[in-house]
Image 1: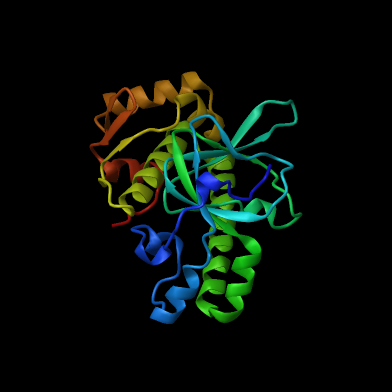
Image 2: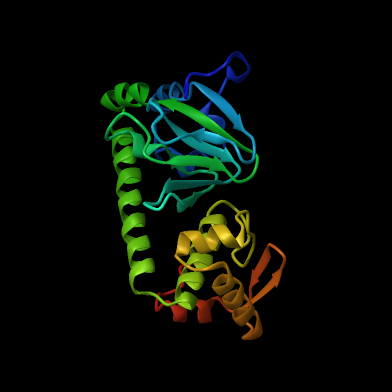
Length: 244
């Protein structure tokens, strides 16, 4: 896949003016450093629902900061089935999988219409030499990805179905709240089948667990709209304190 912007994508982009800057860029930059960081983004790219931002085997050239929309990353399981490995939202960086071998090891598919900022990795590397906080920020993003993978391993290896779904909902609503959304309501951009694929659960189990949570008064569900009625009870299911 060609990671270079097309003429339609050649837009003037300034990280310093973006409402998501504090989520995907370092904080506490000086005005001079902000000017340099503004050089990071080469273009914005729109990705239609169901389309791939990149595919497994594509040459790696850029990281992508999600401005709007949701993505899922997935790989092919040994039996050929798709395995969802994560869901990414606005303010998050994707494409890190390509660094190690200079090619992407997974697919990144838009699950709703999305827009990303294209950040050429050679430009990130060059600017990191002058802006130390940018280098530390990239390292933090990589570390966060490692921690996330460890969390998924724990989720799939030792948790029951109710614990897996409770942890998933709490994580999702907390990430959305950090972006200015409600701390108790969310719209699921992914299907229940995709949730089950990610959590290692059958579709029937996901649906049954949603229904049980609703019957127990933990959540209210209307199609893809979910309201968390008792977040403390969900947190107790996974034995974790609820973050503010």
